[in-house]
Image 1 (spheres, rainbow, N blue to C red):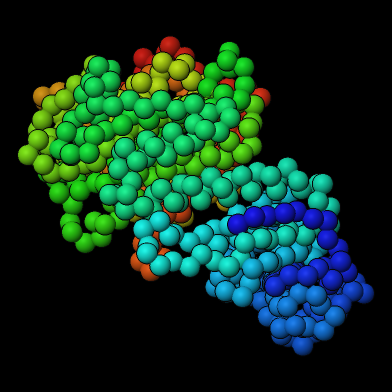
Image 2: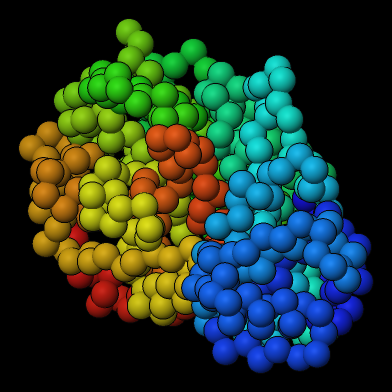
Length: 496
């Protein structure tokens, strides 16, 4: 879907030719003398239009209008959240085959963030998965004009929103593909394709290189599959080489059976979404290619399958991670933390300003937060605050969870340095405490997106989250001071 931004008054919108004109009308709207204002005023007076977010009135070929269809769309207070709700209500309308060109016009001066919310929501509504369908109709809607009172004032916001829309679509596309169409090798090819964009480089490491690096935990998860693993390394260089990068690590389990600790059959097909963290890293780099911000970013994706083959790891096995720490694998379905721990150790070589891992890690996080907010765990208050603010700005919210050292008690093992699981209680926290062992003093955050990376049921499909949160964080970091590293005293206090 292509977007353009125009300065468009209500009187000019009357003569704007398109298949569908959507007028976003907030509470407190004061009608002027143009035909659109007269229509709104009349509809409000007669009680045919409410201005709550999503309430709307559709008209066909209204007099004096160049648009073939008109929708008067209530958007509440006109804030980004209300605008998002309003546009979401038109999802079915936007997929109408007869609508090829649309205009979304703000009836009043728009609040900061509202244009971005409208663009992102329109793009999400227009996405259709087609990769493995023999007969699939793409939406007819191909061009959207966004009309505002002053295009220059919102141009930066519009540019971010359109780039983000591209990145989210890239993430959704790869997360939605079936596991046989999104193997570790194919995910590597998707990353290589990103390397064709200016400023982005891609390096792929196969099993031999990963073994040479000593990534025993990552290798252990992959050994039950016939599909060769890939350690994918992406770099975006938008700033001076002397500037420390932000490193993003995305869990890339392209299919998760649970291994020997086999998952129940019901809804196991959704385990193709277990590479949602990897997909979000791909999506962020796709958006960076559009915006080219002044920041350095490294993306790491440990990609493999978790399968119950005769070579697969067993409960009770002990493996040695890249860090040298030994791990007792009590549950082979807690594999994400095993591939991530080696990637987090590898990330230290880039001397990052901040290290963020993104993973569909625990069902416990879904129980805690549902599908609204991603779980946020962080060793740095400053980093946590920036990520939370970025999530709010992107309408991609997260919620900070605790990281008390006492939660690590359950990870003690009689046969290794650490077990890969603790008890059921606080499962998302104990998983985060496991990962924390492998980050040292680098400012680190972990985003558990098990509840937000995809939807089930009739709306089954990837969401592209948290590409928005991550992109807004990176844009905020461009030129900003970096989070402080832990003091030596804080490092000594880290749980064993």
